[in-house]
Image (cartoon, rainbow, N blue to C red; front, side):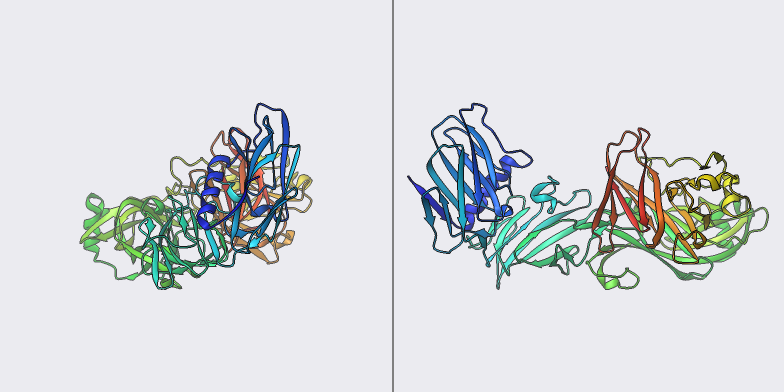
Length: 593
């Protein structure tokens, strides 16, 4: 009998690479031609240490799945060869089959081969001295297989990309530009796509974590390994230390805004993901002097006679921000971001300025931009229901809010915050018990306390409200959940910009009232619902929303404060794409499909 035990990192990588190429996503393999059913079982080590159990029965080689302690095969031969490979970073000192024991010398052994083993129904491999190699480390991630190594090393390519730039050991570079630097090195193997790196504890690896538009790197550490930001944009260093499976590297984020210009109380931006190649944006509005009335009237062209007065001027700037993983916003901690100033955009964004309604009859608000030495009135809509002046722009300089003759709108107007490929939100609708309210005017009266709920509200107490996907419909709609509801739940249909006020007289929150707003963002295969509050609710709240028609099962996650996701449930939408899920607190929720 010829039995061998091998050592060395090259053998580990070759064995694991062969295993991964052949078995990922498959079940233990059986040979179709069957005389003897044989099960090979490994004991003496944690199953997660096992990378592969391979059986060569005189034809094909059949493998287990990584992390499984046994493999079942059906063979027609009387003898077979059996190989056991441990996952990278693990070692053993001896292995035994039957009366045959192969002793090692205590060094880093990770692969054992037994040849000419008699085929029986049960073969046991007993491993001793299984453990980790204190000098060994690996870094693993995948963009292809969500279930690889238990799913803890998957990075969704829609959220960002990862590039390995360099590996330094001590004072010298040992890997750079896609290959070893200065010859071969102990404890060093890098897969061609750099998704799998074997190296030595203490090696310093330089990575480029490039978030997709609308995403940022999740934090200053990933899976407990500290990331140190470098001078180059999106470049980080990480020190190798044991097993490092990269997971959840990037988190979806919103644009950041700051307003210090008089007469503008807040600002929102949408469509910024189309204007950047990575990360997100910060938009800042600071006070500036009003231009002359003559300049403003010239900007209005043939409508100059409609000019009434200048209201306020803001110098609005946009900055592409890419997080270095630190805490704080760009406005509170600018050193925690790589930045790129944005003056002229290849794709316009939508800005909405909150301007107090100080209009007389026959007046509305508009916007004049002063950019590149030219004054121009932009197409803008002022909505008295939302208090928002909304317009599109591709250049950032000074903007003047003006009063002019005209009629503002009082019904929701799309701000363009949802792309044409996004699912349409439901129309207005309100049902409670057997009663219903179908128009916005009726709904508005109820929400503002100018009308009462249908009498049978108190019979069921289930409140259902449907709001459009546009900007805030009412600055603070009033929703009262009744404790006598049949399922003790508040049912709310959420739309982009939905504004809610929960009153404590129904024990919904621990405050006298809880004001929240909600915005939604979309992308390929996901939808995010973000409340501007993270408060706990004292009754169940069922959020109802919509995804594209025909969508299969939807997984719902709660996004935690550190950017990681906690799975809540999996739901199946209706054929039209409607679904609901329970929450017990507000915050941010992400739906993937």
